Amino acid sequence: MFPQKRILVVDDDRQNVELLKNMLESLGHVAEVAYSGIEAIGKLDQNIDLVLLDVMMPVSDGFEIAGRIRSNPEFGDLPIIMVTILDSKQDRLRAVESGANDFISKPIDMLELRVRVTSLLKMKNAQDRIKSSLREKEILLREIHHRVKNNLAIVSSLLSLQSRYTTDEFHRGMFKDAQNRIRSMALAHEKLYLADNLAALKMNEYIDGLVDHLLVSFKTLGKPIRLVKNLEEVYLGLETVVPVGIILTELLSNCFKHAFPDDRRGEIAITLLAKPENTFELIVADNGVGIRKNIDLSNPDSFGLNLVKTFAQQIGGKIDVNSIQGTKFSLEFKNGKAKHRVGGPYESVTNTDC
Image 1 (cartoon, rainbow, N blue to C red):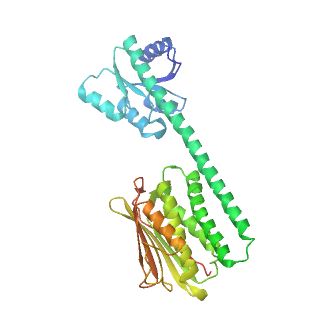
Image 2: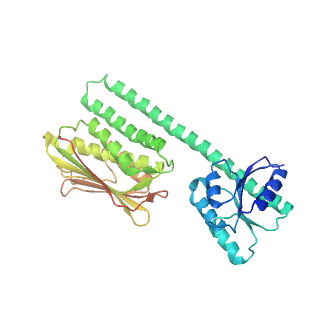
Image 3: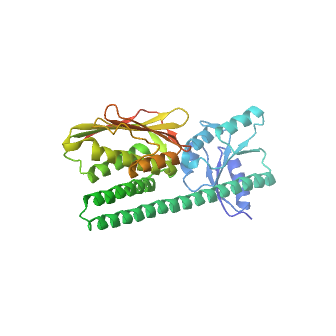
């Protein structure tokens, strides 16, 4: 026998309610009753597993009540059986459009009731198991992101400790660069751990956090640098965020190190655009002294630009540089799991000399 379930019977006819209640209890279930649609809506939060809903009721009929039940995300999967004397194709189509899963005709046959109720309860039971499994996997995935973030933080701390044992500024800089790259990866896992959606990361929030870290790392506060961000609302999967984050870290690090020597005043602009055919463009531009004219991105001679080239290739991207006025790097790439929400860009300006 199927495990005992709570079934809500909704009908304005008390005789029909009593009949259905007795039938359900003989099948081993608990029957809750409601004599109007409004009363039924109020009882849905009593751990109801299935609704037997009469179509012909005053004030609010079964079609309207089914629609109201379905409009609430909490009860979107709740099985509904319409109890009706209506038998036309049009009426049944309307019931399906309202959210009914099945029908049973009056007068009610006990065997038919048992078969239809049991079938829908099995379906709901399977859905509940799937939801439970997904919740468990989500918890596990969050824990993985949390542990990866913590482990990367430990690696970063070890590099920081090691850097204290060298007085060579060149090697200290290498340690700091490595820490910043690790932080860009750790931040992605941290943001996903805290996000509602584990499948994709909101890029403007990620870039904000990454930029804030780099401003502190390079001690830019107090220097006359204006940082402008113009970021469309884009969501990317982790497999794209990490490479993009490392590329952005390298490009901004180059700006902070080389674009504005001798406390020169300047501006850095970060732009993220969503383009047609699921293509995105990340632009990092400054109005500083400019990168050397003969740079070859296909065969870069620095470790940082080698990373930029490697990670751009990893995500199938194309990287270009323009040094006519300052330096402008643009990365064009695709992401199969990305979502772009229309609603205007996110803009912010940071003045580091305040």
